[in-house]
Amino acid sequence: MTCWPTCATRWIDHPVTPAAGRIAIAADIGGSKFAAGVVDRSGAVLGSHRVPTPQSADPDTLFDALTAAIDGALADAGTAAGDAALTPAIGVGTAAPMDLGLGTVSPVNIPGWRGFPLRERLSSRYDRDVGMIGDAVAVAVAEHWLGAAKGSDNVLGMVVSTGVGGGLVLGGCVFAGATGNAGHIGHVSVDPNGPACVCGGVGCLEAIASGPSIAAWARERGLEAPGAREVAALAERGNPIATAAYERAAEALGLAVAGAVTLLDLDMVVIGGGVAGAGSVLFEPLATSYARYATLSFASAPRIRPAALGAGAGLVGAAAVALLPEVYWPGGRKGDSW
Ligand SMILES: [Zn+2]
View 1: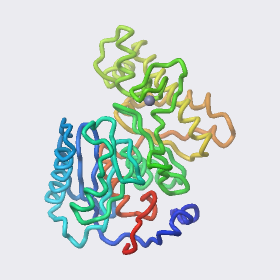
View 2 (view 1 turned 135 degrees about the horizontal axis):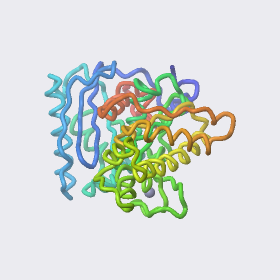
View 3 (view 1 turned 90 degrees about the vertical axis):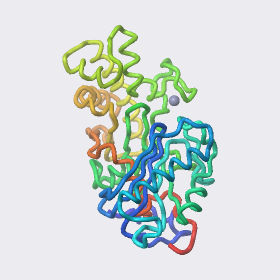
């Protein structure tokens, strides 16, 4: 599979040859942890290290934690930043939002970074280029490269867990949008009369289908369940409130996914994250909901699959940015020595 037929125009200004180097440094920046890894061209993680995200308002404290994770991953892989086998770039998947043009990040759940110049700081620290994508986009990339969406060229990859994130592969290439934030399906409204969302919106998919949202809805109806996992276990045993909680989430997911498929003519939708771990409790009502809302001939066939890769998918997808830049590096590298 190649992205050239549809991506060529994007790359005219930035001629690309496959990245030099056999292994890549990858980082996955999230609100609860900074994970880093060294990943080879088969997608195998040769070494990794993670540190809890500091609860600090100091941007440099946060950055030091990130470099500690990267340095730990290099050590775990038995290599060092100067290794000639490393790709000329670092791949980064980051919690959103970001500004791809400026190279800055302002993750909602990392308040110490607002407009933080992550690309410039990492680049000067490791003397490498830095390719950034959203963390959920990284999961979509990994599923497209090696997982459940392998072989499909038009894919929505979703992570449904504490939040609801997404990423798009269109025409075989990652699609970043104007600022790097394409794929934010969790903040598409699916109910104009729905609950308020942390983003300030109303009735967002995330406010209905995220794990905490599912659990909160069930608790409001008297169910004793601390989290979505417990709700799923109760649903499997036939508890009607728990079942209804997942049916409500599935209804919202099906509506949003059907909209995305109809808008973009996608072949495949992959859903991972903790809530997807509920299995048939989620996916059966989701199939019903999708069928209700995806009615045009090109969209109506079932195409939603559980993710195939586990919790390390974000790191693998971030590494793909450095290992396969012609496919997965939105905007491309702006230099001339690639
Ligand atoms: Zn929202």
